[in-house]
Amino acid sequence: MKVLLIVGLLAVTALASHHSSDPSKDGEHFKGKEHDKKYDHEQFLGKDTAAEFDELTPEKSKEKLAKLVPKMDADSDGFIEENELKDHINFMQKRYVNNDVERTWKNYKAEKIVDGKIKWEDYREMVYGSADGAGQELSSEYAKMIARDEKRWAVADYDSNGALDRTEYGCFMHPEDCDHMRDIVVAETVDDIDKNKDGSVDLDEYIGDMYRPEDYPELNGKEPDWVQSEREMFKEHRDKDGDGKLNQEEMRDWIMPVGFDHAEAEARHLVGIADDNKDGKLNLEEIVAHYDTFVGSQATDYGEQLQKHDPAEL
Image (cartoon, rainbow, N blue to C red; front, side, top):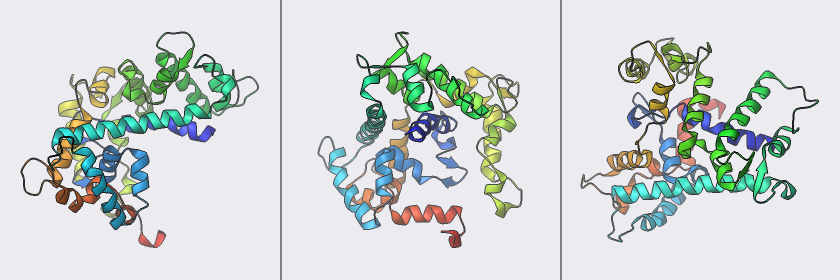
């Protein structure tokens, strides 16, 4: 249980480090010309359902996707328009977050939930083994993890009473979905990327967060084109004051941009890929024909692995 909860709490770090105000430059969505379909699958279905589709044959994936299409068609006109796709993405993402929060909330012992709330000390004891750390010998990384959780807990505690109700706990688990948690998401992301601990993110740290030369052995140390594009993005758009590094405000504009609608951007992106007849909307045939853009399967998952590994290792 401890591992499950800790992994869940850290998931936002990976997510936040790749969010940008421009989806075409999103480190998780695009790397140069390499399009990550897994990102689309998780946006369209939610992470849980996307994982379920990955276990299906292509035929079963198409069959289940075809059954989903009428549910997206709010006006029952036989077409899926961008706004309907956006509403569907929002619904699936909210469902995933709610299910994730409910799963972990139910794991807590009933006697620890008092008046619908859980105290930090009880949470710490259940997840980390001690309410106050007495008698524990912790590695530096483990201690850092606890300290980070405690800071996030304090911000999620909206009424500052030391305990979280289920809504506040949801913000603790998924801070990216709560406006008052924006600063803590930014602070945690800076802490992860800022290797020299000067409180900001320089160009080398920015690139190092998304690019590892060992992932591209075929290039013999030469950087992929998308890395140069990201260097230019850093200098021309991210580093607004031109001082060679990203401060807290610039980081916030990158990973938690105000007014940017990720569901809207993803809906526009999916329509752009699957709209074969260019009428600005999708029909059932177009969606099923592009099924591997919307959902995964055993075949698409295996294809993604082949792009990353030697087939002999699979």
